[in-house]
Image (cartoon, rainbow, N blue to C red; front, side, top):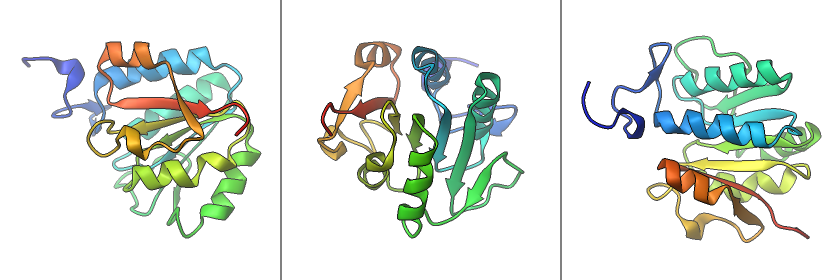
Length: 172
């Protein structure tokens, strides 16, 4: 292996399962979840092969939290708490479900991240955080709704992460 293994997608896997994440994303998630101990779960939109889902499931189990992941395409292997559905067709039902969990980390990494950012965060409980992947390519600052404000920006930028984290603005 050569080059910067922490900032590339090619060949990145978890347990041999392909993962469309930089390795630094796992470092960032660990630190951010540690910084938000009052969360009660992690919800992932967009499962793909499920490698990051396995990481989230492990994080949730270790912390005594809920985890679920949603996608319209079923992964090739069994992924814990995978739910096959069209998240937009079921948006109101899912939103109520997500809000009922208490404060969670919502990860927007499906097929339309800007739409996910507009659709699901308004349902979330106070204290929830929202993360979005593919920052600077599939998701831009203009895609972030006014009711979300960035958190951990300096730390994340310093890592070279392509994920950004947000919370609801005061009074939203």
